Length: 372
Ligand SMILES: *[C@@H]1O[C@H](CO)[C@@H](O)[C@H](O)[C@H]1NC(C)=O
Ligand SMILES: *[C@@H]1O[C@H](CO)[C@@H](O)[C@H](O)[C@H]1NC(C)=O
Ligand SMILES: *[C@@H]1O[C@H](CO)[C@@H](O)[C@H](O)[C@H]1NC(C)=O
Ligand SMILES: *[C@@H]1O[C@H](CO)[C@@H](O)[C@H](O)[C@H]1NC(C)=O
Ligand SMILES: *[C@@H]1O[C@H](CO)[C@@H](O)[C@H](O)[C@H]1NC(C)=O
Ligand SMILES: *[C@@H]1O[C@H](CO)[C@@H](O)[C@H](O)[C@H]1NC(C)=O
Image (tube, rainbow, N blue to C red; front, side, top):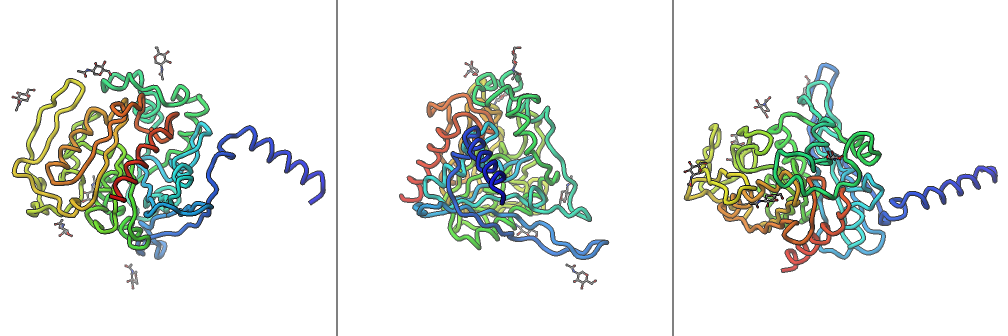
């Protein structure tokens, strides 16, 4: 390389690192990637593979000191970039975990991100608009749709298009399989294949990833050492806040879970439901199981943490998911960030300003849980 080129490259690198804190702050690590799961299907253009899942394994450059690796599962409209550096240039959760001695597996769920979508027969996809993302996730403060929204202070910038942090984040939003049932099915298969390959692990999910967390704990209870569910898609049986559609006939999921006694598989309503009124004006009513509630025997051996941001649209209803789990015999703790002194978080809390405070709480719970 001529001296002037290498000199300008070096200057460029120095300037870039100096002006972009995320470059300097990300944890040193080793990286490999692989794909798990999926199947060959015949199409009009020949045989293609579908439903395989991209997995990126990051290992600390220094020693791995945690007993179990972490598997990070993103939510709807997202992919594995959620866990890397933040859109405001700050350090993301993957680096935080690497700095604390975890091996980290980051997935792009089947048919999105780097996991190929089969254009010749794959299920139709959909995406989240700017209006959906800003009103629910990034600029929720002025929303009057749920009462806790006015507490939202932690998203950096206005949360609206034109703001560079919003624009950086929104550019990362991807399309995904629109049929939730089919996506749950594909994720249970690919996630089980990942656990079979990795061995015992702590699974951490966000939002739409929540139903996959329940399904994986049900399918591979011996391999899910603990389950951290950040605002898991809910509440039981139906949607809340934005609609009340009946979408999860198996309570936590739309695909079958192993209940004891077995639920009425193959019917439209496999579980008997019971409405329960809310105890406070800011909380939604719940639908739980009629008593005596069927139990979730596979999930009983898996410690669960459900975590909810103070200002999120999950704040009104995650209590229903926790009540449902307790009724079904699952050991669950509910970490409500506001009550733990962490204020102002919305749904995309791992990209928000105080994300390090949150991840430190999750780490404490994981350490306490897997070593007890
Ligand atoms: C694809 O078609 C070929 C030939 O028609 C058949 O042998 C093969 O089993 C099919 N594969 C799948 C995955 O259906
Ligand atoms: C919320 O409303 C206030 C007052 O109208 C306005 O100044 C602010 O920009 C709005 N914030 C967002 C994120 O929309
Ligand atoms: C409901 O939430 C709002 C906004 O945080 C708060 O001002 C109000 O005190 C809450 N009401 C109850 C009954 O908790
Ligand atoms: C979603 O996929 C399932 C098969 O996995 C199918 O039974 C169902 O009809 C589909 N729903 C819609 C709305 O297409
Ligand atoms: C429900 O029925 C389907 C189709 O027969 C079967 O594949 C699945 O294993 C059953 N699941 C449970 C939990 O009963
Ligand atoms: C629940 O609330 C509804 C009205 O919102 C009321 O009709 C019903 O009696 C309440 N149920 C219980 C068990 O309190």
